[in-house]
Image (cartoon, rainbow over all chains, first blue to last red):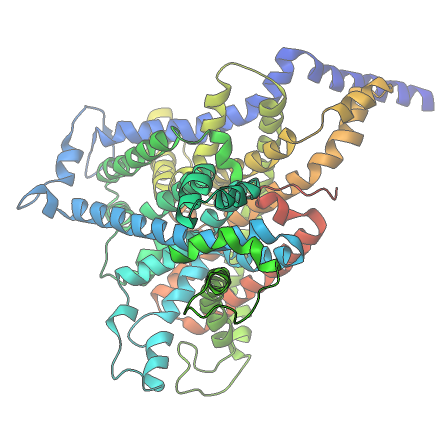
Length: 311
Length: 305
């Protein structure tokens, strides 16, 4: 009886192992599930999104009329005046601007900390990483909300300044608007930059810098000729991970713009949620997707995809 | 840029500096020291910047007047009481926990299998497979959310006659796709640094493949799998925009919180937000000590395991 069960479990075990030893089944079992999942829930929806952007929708039944049209794209740029005065173009341009400033700000702020972490290591490392990672892991919505408390005419910053008698009225800079959004986004995506920079600085041979300095290179020259080329993959992947989500941000501009600023993500959300204008929304999304494809195509000239694993 | 250039010399700070030898306004040693110090100042200021808004929010969660400090009217725990007594909010919190757990489990199974394929086997279109796998992490939430909303609500019923009511399971499916790349990245990077001679040694000593997998491979890869699951779980738990589009009429925690802010109920918002910061802090502290998550997140596998 006992030997019989052990016999059976043994053969089941051999069959299980056998399934992993033939090359074809091994590949099928490991690559297959994710392939099916991503095909059904990523590739198909995105492909159809491209298709929907070139169709129109029956306004009463919400049925898609499968006839190719560029009407949605015309609509993006339709309206009085030249195309750069349309709501779509303005919010797209503003989103690029905000995302670009955020990226530069993150880079400038993250570099010193990444450098210190890579250089010093040791016991403080864990504490500092913890202090950086905790806000990073804290809900994105909570972080946007915490800045929502700080900013505004009667927010924490303005009311504290008033109380201390530093100013006489609310300071415009600390009201809701573009500066608040940039601060909020920097706070949200800064850790991506830090981790990317850290990953590339961590492998750096710092004696190269000393060698360059000993041979008479100035600090600027050492930075430009030694550090920069070696850290470039980190800078590029970090920039991607800050720029791309900033471009499509929704919550942060919603809370910290308080209706005064309309970024592209908000514009799309508004059209989809209040009108279910899926054609317009898809067409507008294509511009975000296209920007990302271009950004990645440029980035991949300098870094390989494995370098993006730093995050 | 002045602060950035200071760093390359801060190895020199260990040497004894002769104070007050230079008569020039800024001599060489002082300059080195100032640059190195300004570096610490920037790093310190940064930590303050990261923490100030959260600290303010946490303090306000205990304050009677919930949205600003002045005029200060004392501390209270009433906001926490009201928050945990809010049945709708607690239901949405429970939904979030369920969604995150199921979605992260799916993402972990798919991610671990793919990671072994990528790290161990060669197959056609491998790079495409990898790029495609990282895509869900890279696509902005608005785009992924809308693409899946149109797919679930319009395309599946119209083209394939599949009726899916957006709700709990559509959020789970969406988040399982979103969490997958995080598992993939963490587990593949672990497998790439894996010393495969350990497996060979075990095989040479007569271990069958299953034993090798259980006794050698798993213990080494397990921390990365755990970190991947944790990452995917947190990503799902904190996601607002993807859930917002595909949730139908179901509320998860983030969508409840979003409507709270829209209608201006700050006291409960402070309390639930501070509570989340606290829970995440505990989870992260435990994970960092147990599984060396920090090392993995920063891309530096420690030598401890």
